[in-house]
Image (cartoon, rainbow, N blue to C red; front, side, top):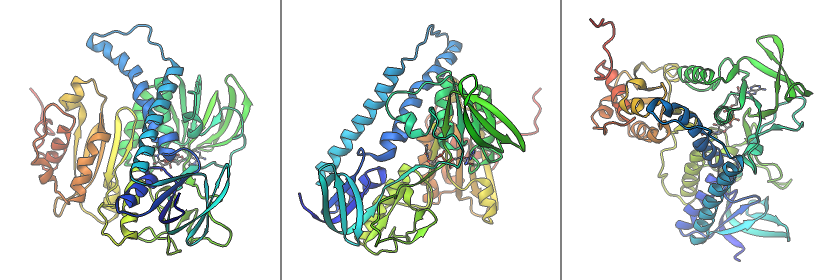
Length: 472
Ligand code: NAI
């Protein structure tokens, strides 16, 4: 095994493994160090297992809807063991694929815990002892771990994080209380609601998804309530104790009133914090930005040979962003121009219907001083949504009034996560709403809603009733 590298990547999540493969493709002697499973949080305890569960549990809801189309399913059973096994199989198949890619590209894999000793040396601790390896540059991609708020009772049995729910067997609850109405909270609310579990969400801010477009968050809240999910806003959990009808009692304050709720499980999903404990030897410490590692535009930390990407640096915590940063960081280390536009970042929530957004929402654009024009198409008018018995939703485009350039898009519709890419491209390439409307989109597809939303900006949407017209 070589012990002198040009680049060592610490952490093999979507940021780290992609960066390592990119460096190897540039002909650099590259190693990657991972203390747990290859693939990081996204593959092992995040995106992939969550979406595998969502994909399956949504069929339980769809089965009910199919009765309208003449197909009745009776005695539908959910085999939790099989559900868990399939989740693990999907994860392990992808993991084998990534390991294969790393090896085939000549990346050396160290299975162990890395400690940065100085600018060019890393100590790797494995079961067999410690090895020191040298490198010209280091890329930190160690990701994040669930943040735990200061609430009494978090150590009780059945008080869990997303890590616990996604590792091993599927945990079954009659009633799940979710602390935090962010992305993780909502995706698990959707999964457990589909599985027939009673779900309640406690969110500290005045609405779920407080950082998203208000209309999206309001529409999701309405949809969730229709499905029987209870949402408390401006609510904060004070403590969790044992007792009650399901085993746990959660004491919380909602709009200044103290209340309690019983639950069998409590999911804590109030954000994630950088995973950097034990990463640096005591003599070496890069400059920090709060809990995050501070980097410049090239992802270089205050130590010139050390770079950082993904959840350990300030900014959005998204797998695809970490991968993109990994590629650009490697390009910058080797003096190449960035091949990816890091300013346009799509984000997705895998609930039903799906949510996807990119660029600025209307309020953000106005706050930045833009005069905006907004086009919006309600998806219940979209043929594909109707024929596939999709739920209500919309596609909204926010454009600059002066030149028509697309500034942002919000989608709440079936397959939103698969069609947001075209709008990310439009923003990156500075397309206007007129450019977007020039494209022929196949019929019937969900994407036709994009054409309609773009046409709506000039009130020219074909499949929308003109406003203020009374039908005879
Ligand atoms: P988040 O930051 O999205 O949401 C946390 C929520 O908890 C916020 O709404 C916040 O107001 C609330 N909160 C904080 N303290 C609270 C308290 N004491 N009581 C009640 N509510 C409280 O964090 P989340 O959902 O844990 O996700 C972590 C990160 O992972 C996010 O950046 C998210 O974007 C990312 N992620 C992305 C996914 C995707 O792209 N589909 C899937 C899962 C996670």
